Length: 359
Image 1: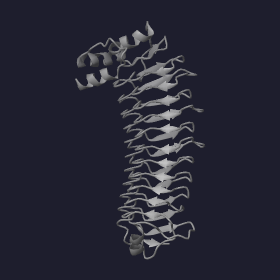
Image 2: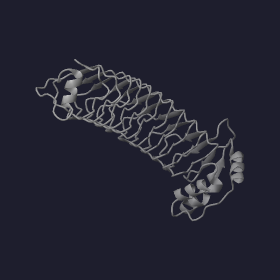
Image 3: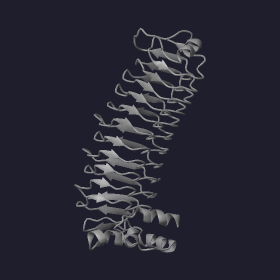
């Protein structure tokens, strides 16, 4: 009953007819549809089970619907015709037989709607055409078998929505087109097998958003693209195998818990552009022993490096001022002398770093 309530909630107000079906009927229909390709001639797209489940929803907007049923193949693939402009919200949501999506040559699809492929757990791969501008929230959420996502050369993609690829646990690599300006909250959260993330040159991205790669436990290295200004909270939290982070000289803020519990991160270099490291930004990075600070930071918040066994902190800049604020005495007591840095270190910024050495 909960599943039906959620599905009904996702339908638009114009959907006045919803064909109820029992679980047995649902399963029977999926079995009947297995191995077929569907082509919708009038530019509307349906999932295999939406032919009986939500047909009225689309007919109310588009009139007559005609299908061409293709021959049986080794995979259950839906063909998206060239004239299709969007894949509607929840169009293929919870489809239990869909394994692939084929776009006609010179596709003109511009958007993939919210939850369009939500929990299509057999979906294996998708090649997204150059024409797609936006991938909405949860579009591929919980597609646990999705192991390949590629973007066509010259992609026009601008936005990837919140939770778009959440828990795509088979996805191992992704190349983000340079045209992307925004990636939403937790877009790749829980992609356990994601080990390679590449941003194309000349990226237009300006922020690494909240929780974007949270709990990507196999991610081993990341080069954040030039032009990014902020690394938001939980961005790389619990990326336990992350060993290399390159932060460009455009980032001004690293927010709370951004790199917390990155257990295998041994060293970090803070670029000259950075002004603020927020509370617990590197909390629990138990292999982090060396930090190079190249910027006269404005603020390092409480417990920024809490739980890190820091032994070497290099201040790679020349300033005349000694630290100001509540943390100055703490640094003097635990590191032997006040470093040349006009940052304001708040109490607890370097908790548990009793053996630190200033270079």
